[in-house]
Every structure is written in structure tokens, then in C-alpha cells.
Image 1: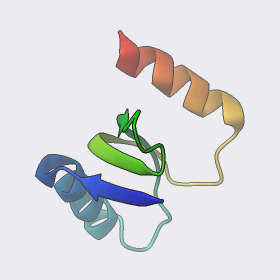
Image 2: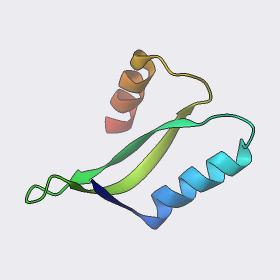
Image 3: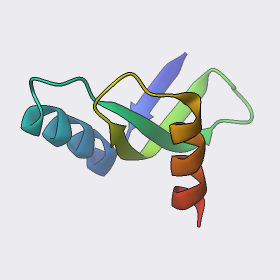
Image 4: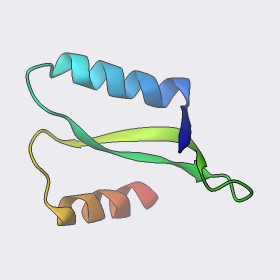
Length: 68
């Protein structure tokens, strides 16, 4: 699979990981998949979610909040 990242989404990931360099960072990557080539995606935004091993429901809640 090939993924490209927007400048803003990449900066969010790097800056958040740098700010919390002693913790793990789990987050949500949002973007689109090319309908003509499903192995190619484009990440347009990233949302930091938590700094621990996440439960599945926290990602569901994050996706709901982000989609609104």
C-alpha cells in the first residue's frame, strides 16, 4: 500500500510526537482511497487520540466527533 500525507497532517503527527516524546501516541488518520487503485491512499488530516493502549470504543467516539 502506498500512502501520501498532506503537509498539515504530517506536521501534526511529528509535532505531537515531539511534544510527548516519552509517551506513545495513538491517533486517527483521515483521508481518501483512490477508487481506481485501492492500494493508494492520501492522508488529509490526523487527530491525536490518546497516550496509552487504546480501547476500540475510544476510536469510535473520536470518529463520531470528527465527522460532525
